[in-house]
Length: 186
Length: 211
Image 1 (cartoon, rainbow over the protein chains, first blue to last red):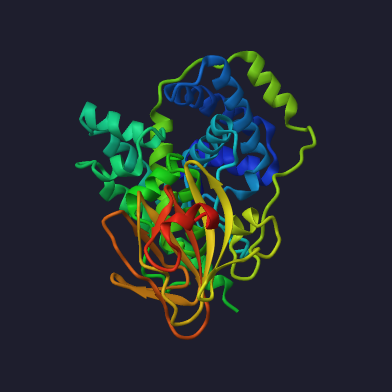
Image 2 (spheres, rainbow over the protein chains, first blue to last red; image 1 turned 60 degrees about the vertical axis):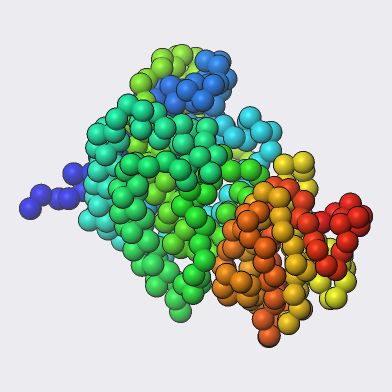
């Protein structure tokens, strides 16, 4: 069997190089991949091109500076960057800091678990495929929801969405968190 | 921690992950997630869905100037954002609102105390302290009320809520939470509208007590 690590996505490899080796070239690759998508994403929720560039700059700098909190066992790079981007945009628009949970960084010193990282990537792939299968109007609703344009009440009335896929991600994430919890026990 | 049985409803978790939840409710969700691996996994799964959409978003050209600026800033020293640690029973997001100080309690009568952490026209966040056996006065609410137990437990018409458990009540729920025997029950409560207390504090006094 080939080394499973070579099967990790490019984005994950880049992000790990940034986190573990402060690799600037890998960061430039991440920038070139994510910055244009981020800009498109941010502009969808109404930011001007100029403001979007500012947010992109902020988010990509945060990717560099907060790299230590990236954990490929728990989230694909895109999920981790999405969350940073939402925080930045909300902080800017509302001019107040969004309440965030305590960070939970796996500092149990365990070796990277390639199969878990691959499972996380695989789930991300399933999610992407499920989104691709949506009818246009459903897709639009989902986009609105994750751009923060729907209230929780509106989200609760959405039907026929790939929530099952989100749920399987929850199970995967929960397994990992339980594993970490166990490692933290005295 | 794993004994938590009342969680954040999924639509609320999705709205929180997307940044669409009002500030007061976001504080409660962030606090619950700090205590609950299950809801943390749920939140991260919603980030995953957001990330999948981000991956799929058509690209918009980013100027060379922005790229150069970011690369040039990588070596600049920066001040990390302050991290608020858990203080006793108060998880990070509550410790942040308390600014690292103990709560300033105000008596509401019958041994019930509250400490208002934030209050805007969009909602309020407060700590409530209820002695064992004491009822939180019968109240209905306009809008939604979220109550997260930080210490002790309470029971109302819908069930028992212990440390880490979250009750989400809307205007249709007329309930009387009673603190269980044992420890004083301390809760984090958020509303998007003023509560209407029926007993203990007459409505006329609400502006004075700010409840």
